[in-house]
Image (cartoon, rainbow, N blue to C red):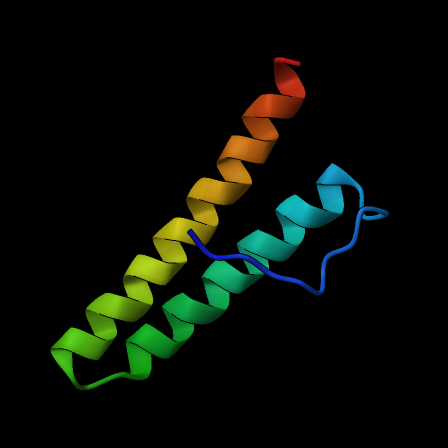
Length: 64
């Protein structure tokens, strides 16, 4: 699962969720432009991982 050392303990959960969703969107954009199928699949996989991470944090916040 992707990690991002730029995020600190001072970031709110909302900021982390937004950051991970932005990262997912960036990977999807790169995938749209990628012509090598294996590379495109890898980029889409990274996007899915970031989305999953955002969703997990979001769900954890709703069910402490």
